[in-house]
Image (cartoon, rainbow, N blue to C red; front, side, top):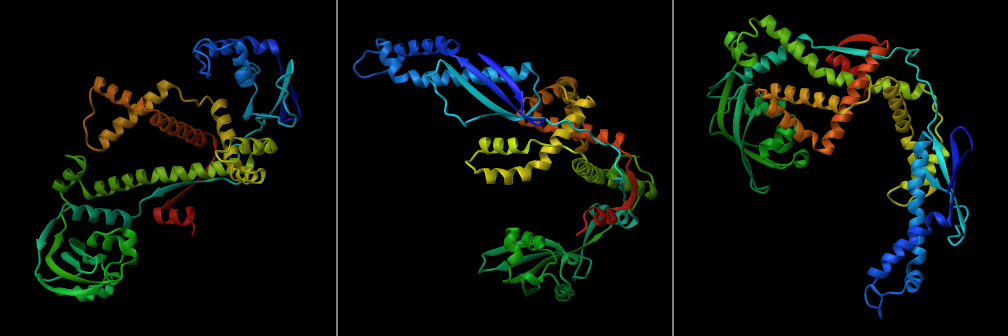
Length: 440
């Protein structure tokens, strides 16, 4: 067998393979000999089928199969030995019909080289790195929510704007008979006027679409699908079952200890600072993702990468799950081009900066994730043996391994970006961030 390579241009080349009869003849005869022992052919006992008959019936199919296996294994080995950096995989050239009976059979395979390129980490226009701070309104609202959550319900005789009402919602035609608690503040203004002053035992009728500000609240009250609630326009009978007012919990040490643990917070000022810090942590993953996306977009647009497009279009056509035309393959290529470019950029960053993830890295990362998750839910960290067992179970799942590897790789790349790009820091409130980062 002879294998050689010729470079058509910087982006593509041809691997030529010449296979002689002696390369595959021995293996073909070995397979056919086994067939004489196992083949079931009418008129012959199993194990006594003549070789001539086996060759006549199976010879060509076995020869083609063995040649293809020989091609596949040697082609892979050649690419590995020659350290060819290629995209996709070799594409067989089908321009000339193959003569399978020839003493020497020649094959040509087209390949696309991974292009060389440089990455510029110094953009002319600085990328904005947002720092989101919780504003006074956000902290005050959260403070009130905590006071409400830990407060007490006090029974009332009449409904007012601060009431929490439990009511029975009835629609015989829709087979609805469901009791649910709602806050008067969640109701549309026109329906609030009808509710104010009602007592336990009172009832009224209203069109379902005119009751709540949000369809989700109607969905909960009627116990129906959200999509159905959005379209619901039938009348409902509403019977008042219970009226309460929630008295806010006092901002004292007892509340601080319930929410944050004993003696962790000792004043309202400390509580507000803690809530502000917690908000920033909540925003961080969203802000980091925005920074990651903006940096990737810059790298794709600023990095000149000449992909072997003609080769890749043919490769996508050949490897598509369903049969597609060359024009359809071009459309798929156009959709995938940005993604392919970033894969090359990401790979170069990882290799050039030693950001690869090994088993020990992944194990340490998984351990930290599990510990943090347990602390988040108030669970005690198990002893080393039990923790190792949990980690082993997680890392025995191939899908989890893939997900965690991608997560750790993404974290390392983001850290690399933060260390190597000079971002323009911009401090904003959450509302300002949403308006700037996601303009409608």
